[in-house]
Length: 155
Image 1 (cartoon, helix red, strand yellow):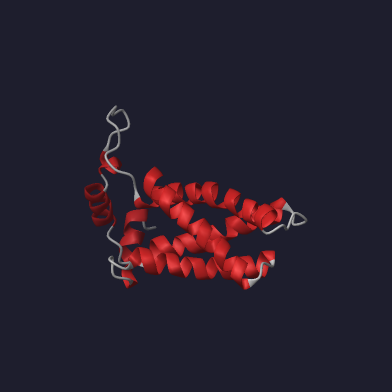
Image 2 (cartoon, rainbow, N blue to C red):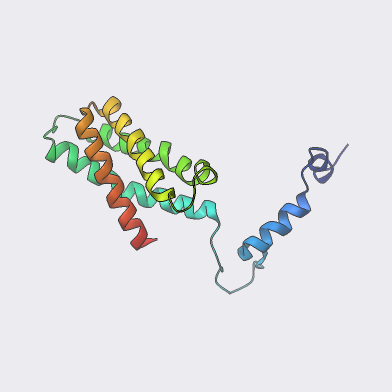
């Protein structure tokens, strides 16, 4: 019977290389459990989760205000708007953080990334909530401009 290290080695994956590379890239991984020193940096995935929750906290209330008050759709259930806001961000932010960066030049990344997010989220708002295309685009632009600007400030 092969132990875990041997099975991983058979898959062509060098566990030791992965651990030492991760330790070099993220000093938090080598800190001892009894260390009182604060972590030096956060993992990229942790930053993503923080950005995801922050985006939800910013965009969902704005979406509810825009749909129910500005667009006078008070008959629309708040939970439908809420879950649509969750869906918009959950479907777009992972692509923005993990899929898009290798394919777009860093100088154009914020502009191209946010434009793609606005288009996808406008489509979701149009289909799920039933806003017309113009209002869907305006909602998506407002949500993303606010979360991008506050994200720069907060994170």
